[in-house]
Image (cartoon, rainbow, N blue to C red):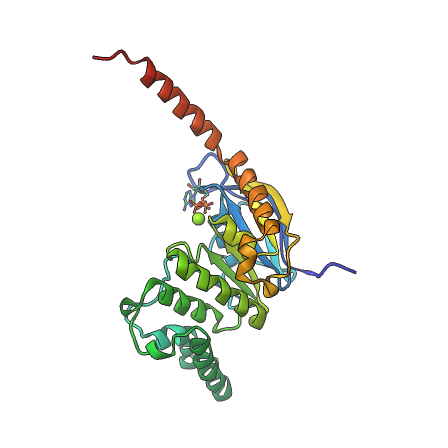
Length: 285
Ligand SMILES: Nc1ncnc2c1ncn2[C@@H]1O[C@H](COP(=O)(O)OP(=O)(O)OP(=O)(O)O)[C@@H](O)[C@H]1O
Ligand SMILES: [Mg+2]
């Protein structure tokens, strides 16, 4: 069987921010397949958000490049949608207006036909329905809980049927129970929409439960430590019970160990031990 053609190809990618001596990312080579659910994990500062912003076209690389279906990424585009941790909704627009915002711009600028506008209206209702936001479609963001706001942000990102959905710790600000609900929601949406998803998270269990491959990045400079193809059912066939299954816990352990090994935590423990030693030596007053 031949491997599916890569949807996103990243080759020799490097990024050094102005004024920084150390690259945020260095020599990244990575392919993401069409319809794949890929998770990016790694210690804080290893360049996860930078990599996502580069794929989104919100930052320009210093070296190497990114190709989306063989077309170089040189800026943002409607085939890529981004969901950030902080919801980033327009506070002066209602839920429905937020979801339809980009589409209404196109209608106003004459870039959408009447039938396209009508099907966009239908899609916005269907998305709000799936997201359980029907009853609050005329509410403003400040009247919603964090979980609801993030569902609006996801619905808005999905409105234009993006080929690639880029998510940067989308559930990071949510409580554990809401996050569990969101995991099931995103897996079902993944099945329906068939987008390619690149998902950044700090939560290793979330990464191994949602993704089919997990990329561990190492910091200083940001680089790929390893790519783990998980021997688990495909994301669309996963069920919450899997979170307690030995095979998932095994993957969680493997990924956690790599993050620990690359994060410099051991170095910090050495510092703590030294502090403890000094405290022990202190003569009582
Ligand atoms: N706009 C910027 N200007 C200068 N340096 C930056 C900028 N954005 C990020 N960096 C640096 O680049 C490196 C990677 O940052 P990035 O935000 O991509 O890491 P991250 O893995 O997303 O971290 P976290 O897990 O804390 O969100 C860090 O050293 C950070 O300080
Ligand atoms: Mg980040």
